[in-house]
Image (tube, rainbow, N blue to C red; front, side, top):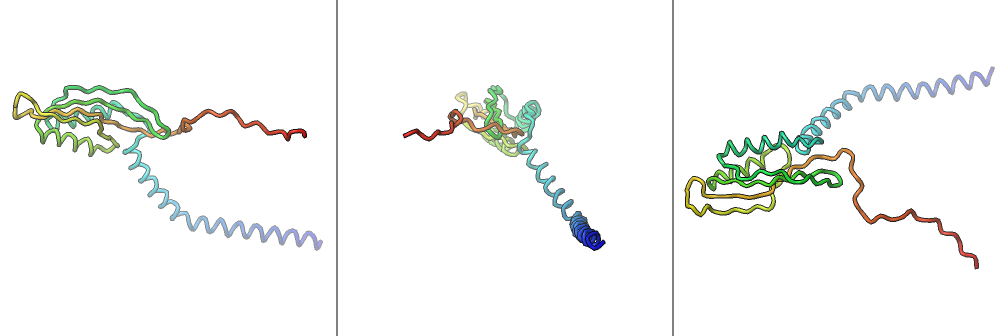
Amino acid sequence: GQDRLVALKADYEKKSTELARARAAVADLPRFEAEYELLHQRWTMAAELLPTERQLAVLLRKISLAGQQTGVSFVMFKPGGIRAETYYTAMPIEITVFGGYHQVGSFLAELANLKRIVTVSNMRLSTNAKGDGLASTSASMTASAFSLNTNPAPAPGPASPPAAKEEPADA
């Protein structure tokens, strides 16, 4: 009888501790839910900057619309080869536009202000030899958009064979 009583008392203590932990977790639930909501909002904002899908058609429409809104004319608009990196995929687009100097500047500002990350590289500005004041500037560039790789590939490195266990040499 005494052993049974000791076992029941130990079980009671264990269950009481578990109950206290559960009550503490329930009391913290509103804080955890608020923290989750904040993190979810941050994730949503980050996903707009670096989406997991390439969404190339949407991006091309936005760049085209930026050109229309700023009054530049597209001479070349050529999506390049997609380049996969460890954590992201780069999607370069060769673009050449012409228009007034300030129109070209406004177009670049629109690219910079897109919700997703777009970098401009290989920028070449030139003036129109005809002296046409309305379309005085030509700009060639590579605009690269990025998407997040949800399953990052291991970084490329030298392939090494699995290490063999060294056997002690017999002397």
